[in-house]
Length: 302
Image (cartoon, rainbow, N blue to C red; front, side, top):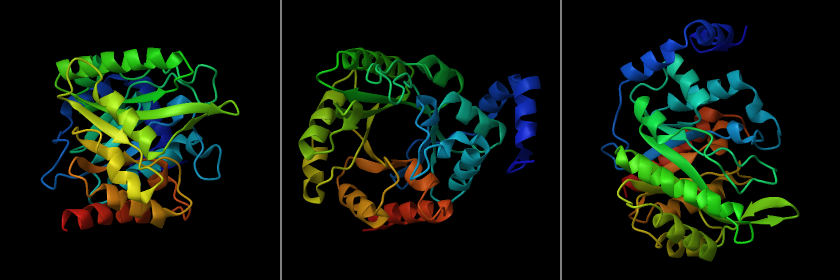
């Protein structure tokens, strides 16, 4: 029987079937912490990809389809020293709640997952995940929203409007809105994000102005391809910013160099990384997480 730490997968499933009330009870009893600790840095593990149909990691197109394996990888990451929390959809976060893995961790709920990978409506990214009221009720700490803008796709306008509404609703409850912006376009029928410095700066400027207040808005941004242009792109805002991981990198050392350069900027506060930590090429989750922690600690001590 597959085991996920203290519970077997069957026991987790049985708890969900017979005692669904235990999820709300675990949320009510969870020990919380500030988003930023004393170091002023934050490392969050992202595990919200499956709900958008994005199951691939590295060379495996179905890597994230095995829930027991995914939970085990997230648990390994969360237990490493220096990891502050997790980003996920309701199903993943509630599994982790039942497993007791969210104590004294930052918990960020994923809000818009309607833009399914490969769909004709991918850029009309409806809010099919957490609502602000759900995050408040569950005593979670923030909501994450994806804002991809294709100037040739009218669906992006619906996404932008939904994102602005979410920013307002989260701020009204004193919850952080973590906005992940991209300028995107379709290439051969598939959505591709533009990671040039100009495009990233433009997407940051758009995301920074969402809603009736930016008091509780953070940005989750990619690191641009050009190492010497990282500062130029991220100077487009004064909002607190974290760097995202994206796909599993072919060259982890080069990715870490770009992260290190971006972490020099005063508004950049840490990393939110999913597949690059959970499914590294050598399959050493603990090693990948520890390398990211070392990078943050090294920058903090300079």
